[in-house]
Length: 390
Image (tube, rainbow, N blue to C red):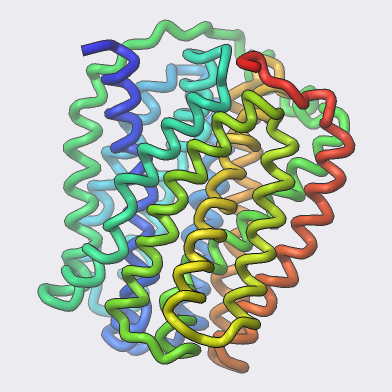
């Protein structure tokens, strides 16, 4: 089998499971809250700290991949994150549950900047398309995660849902030894020159974009099933399937974003993505409640929110010096998944105090701010309007 096909297959599985470990929570949010005897705000706080760790650890994972190699770090990340899920088996109160989430997030946090750097190095041309294929493979594997997790949680126990995906992660880490890549190494003084990276012109626009889109990603991901069940009266089964639909449509979004960023430039795709996110949330909140509105939201939002990922990754790879690639992806991931993680506790508080509808109006407001920032990026970085594959 072609070496690239093997690498993409294994990395796609790893990417899928890296997210699946945390996609177990949203469809089982009400069940876990009831089982542990805690509020949505408390679970939102745990989720916020979890995702903050998930984002912050990228600041370690990125430079670590520059130092010891991307493949080695990805194996450590996915393997130990999966092993950490076993702690859920003894979770009978919020403290043990939180410890399991935090430990799982710590190990999982190393993955994204490492995998992104690996792909950027292996595919110097058509980077956006390579990122899109990798992310699409990850999305495809995640599609059934909310539904599988929900039914495992209902039929067996919510704890087993976490462990199931954890065991799959351990198996995936074991087969990662088949990925072979010669990586260029740089001395520590070049790899860790964060001040050089922070001097990239107008970098603040990219970082602000990632913080806002990270807030939206977490706010919608964690509370969308709850929005449908508590806010719109749908069953838990349909709410779980709807989260799976977002991931299914997101697979197409990843491919569109990857190919589009190479052909038209990443800034145009980012503008398309930000517009779609805002439109989808307004449709969900303002259109009459029915099944077709829910499907329309999952289609537009799923394609849009995932189309931004390969495009933003491609843009960052173009403005970042090669010897700072791991660090650059780590900083980007921190702003998206670290700072953006505050969405879980904010939306949890709003849901407890005012209802889940108010939480989603906040998400719509953040989406409007995201569109404004994207317009700035489009104007500032349009010099990168054509990729190397165009």
